[in-house]
Amino acid sequence: MSFQENFLWGGAIAANQAEGAWNEDGRGPAKTDVTTGGSVKEPRYVTFIDKDGKPGKVINGQPIPEGAKYAVLDDYYYPNHDGVDFYHHYKEDIAMLAEMGFKMFRLSISWSRLYSHGDEDQPNPKGVEFYRSVFMECKKHSIEPLVTIWHFDTPLYLEEHYGGWNNRQLIDFYVRFATTCFKEYQGLVKYWLTFNEINNTIMMLNLFGNHAGDKEHQQGYQQLHYQFVASAKAVQIGHEIDPNNMIGCMICGITFYPGTCDPQDIMANRHMWEKSIFYCGDVQCKGKYPTFAKRLWNEHHVQLDITEQDLEDLRNGCVDMYTFSYYMSSIETTHETDDMVSGNFAAGARNPYLTYSDWGWAQDPLGLRYYLEMIYDRYEKPIMVVENGLGAYDTLEEDGSIHDDYRIDYLRDHIKEMGKAIDNGVNLIGYTTWGCIDLVSAGTGEMRKRYGFIYVDKDDQGQGTYNRYRKDSFYWYKKVIESHGQDLD
Ligand code: BG6
Image 1: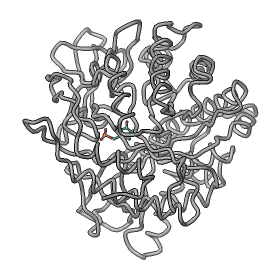
Image 2: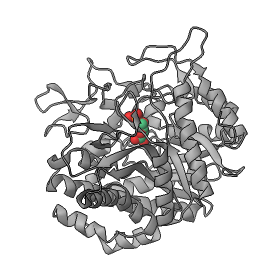
Image 3: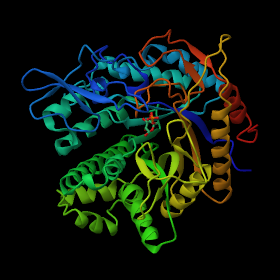
C-alpha cells in the first residue's frame, strides 16, 4: 500500500515565527525583528531611523532609504519578538507532537542565536545549548529532527554591515554557521535543509512583474549564486563530518498551469517553471546551471560573478534529497485578465476549477501530485513535502476544543494525492505539515492565520496566555499516523 511503515510523518515550524525570546541569552536581531504585524489587507512594514534621526517605515521587501538604520520603534508591534514562545515551551510542545505520534519534526536554527552578528569566530554557547536541548527532547520521544539551517533569518548585522547576500563574504559566514550546526549536533540530527524556499528571490521578482528590471534581476541572480555556493559547500562539509547526513534543498513549490491552449501561454508557462522552479532545483540537484539559465540571464543582461572554484563547488555539493513546500497552483497566461489572485510568492489568473482560502490561496491537491511526479522524474532523488497546510481562522470554544474540519479536509485531500504519487513510483519519504503548532504568519504577521494541530492562545496584538490546546485535527492526524496513512476519515 501507499505509505511505508517508515514514512516520516510530522510537522514543521521556523525559529523566527515560533521561538520568540528575540533578545534573550545573547541572540542578535534578524530582519523579522524589525518587521511589524500586518493583515490580509495591510502589508507588513520594516521600520528604521533615517539619517536625520527620523523614524520611518517601508513595505516589507522594499529597501530602506540610504543612510537609514533598521530600528525597533515604540509605536509598533513586532509579532516575531515573542512568536509563540517555543523557546520556553519546547518541552511541552514536543511532548504534544509525540502524543500525535510524530516521526519527524522540522524546525530551523536561528542564525543570530548561534552567531548574534553573524561574523564572529565562535558561536554563542547558550544558543548552541538551546538547540542541543531541543534535539535531546526529540530524541527522548524518538522524533527525527529535520533542521533548516537558514529560514529567512540572516542576522540583521550582516544585512547592515555587509549588504546581506549581495556580498560574497556571506558564503564564508554561512559556511561557518552551518559547520557549527553539523559538528555540534552530530549524532542528534541526520536530516538537514540548507536554505528554505531558496527560489523565493526569483518568485519575488516575478511578483513585481515589469517593475523588476535588469538591476533587480542582476541583484537577485547574484544573491542566489552566492547562496547556491554556500549551500554546496555546506553539503560537502556536512558529508565530511558525518557521511550519514541527508542534506536537501528546499524549494517553494508552486504548480503552474497555462491559462489557455494558445501556444504563447504554453511557452510562457514552461518558462515560468524554468525560472521559478527548475532554475534552483537544477543547480542544487544536478550541480550545474541548466541550459536555459543563459536565456534567463540574457533577458536581463545579467553578468554574474562566478569563479571556477564556485563551479567546482556546485558540482561537488549536490543535495541528497529534494524537498519543497506546497500550498497551491497558479495560472500563467499571456492574455489580459482582470481576475487576478495571489498567494504566498505567486500571482496569476483565477482558476475557476479551484476553491480559495480566506487569504486567497488556491486549494489544489491534484497540483501536488502533478508537482511530485514531475519533479521525481526530473531528479530521481528521495522527496519530502516539508510544508503544506491551510491557514484559516479557528475558534477556541469555551470547553477548550477547536473544530477545524476544514483543515482536516484540506490535509486529507493532499495526503490522498501523495499516496497516489507513491503508487505511481515517486520515492516520497516524508511529509511535514506547515505550522503544526500555530505560529506567526510569515506573510502577514498575523496569529489568526492558523495552520496548527495545536492551538496557541495568542492574538494579533500579542495578548493571550500562550496556553496550548488540541484541535480536532490533532486527534485526526494521530489516527492518520497510527494507521500509516490508511485511516483518513
Ligand atoms: C512558506 C514559508 O513560504 O509559507 C513559511 O516557508 C510560511 O515560513 C509559510 O509561514 C506560510 O506562509 P504564511 O504567510 O501563511 O505564514
